[in-house]
Image (cartoon, rainbow, N blue to C red; front, top):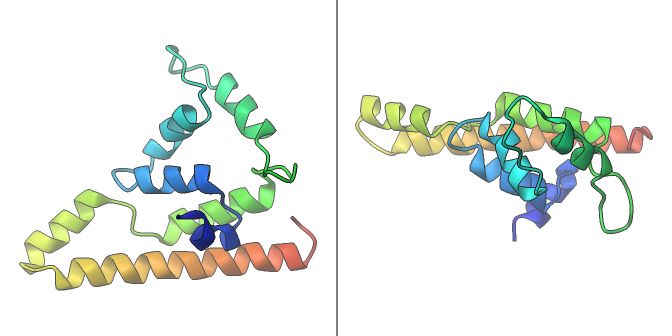
Length: 129
């Protein structure tokens, strides 16, 4: 259900799962990708299996999933998105209500989506896809 909203950003359902799970903390994205791509390793320092999986990940039509443009779009998204549950909890406590945390989450996530959309679609139009 999430993919239609994130496909214009160059993301598929696998990246979408990473985006959702990283709401707890941004660094959770990497471990989520390990689980989604079934490349878990007992050795935390050995990222080669995950790197190989990401390099070979494909869309159903055979295109590479993680292109430089998609990775740049993902970085833009993470720079601007509200991706931290603890920050929302602190804002709720400090403002003594849900108005500002909801506004902050919607505003920042919306800004991230729009900027990521502009970057990805502009890059595709210029032939960087």
